[in-house]
Image 1 (tube, rainbow, N blue to C red):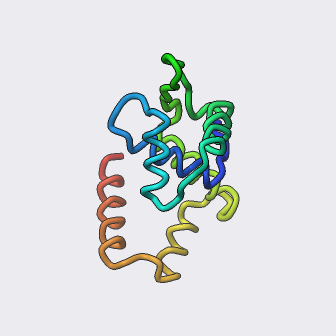
Image 2 (image 1 turned 60 degrees about the vertical axis):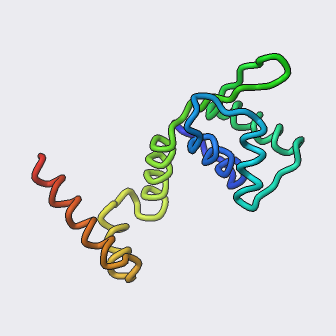
Length: 127
């Protein structure tokens, strides 16, 4: 099961997930956080990366004096786990409840509604 991570840890993971390279270096993460308007002290980032490794999100390989970080949990895996957790907690596992709330609460733009409708029809026909 995928563990919960803090907002700060999630910001780091978004940077790592968005990296086109197989490994991510510390300076890349520091620069990514600064570019997102969330600069971080070096020691704080070291602690957050350590937590992400302990939670099984990242692995680190020491190359000389630097660590190369590799993701162990994909963004899609995390999103799926968090969506399921949210559905269970808020809607008692009912995806229908969530979608109804989005529609009835006027939380979807017209384009999003039409796209969801197309996705549902496409999925329905493949069963």
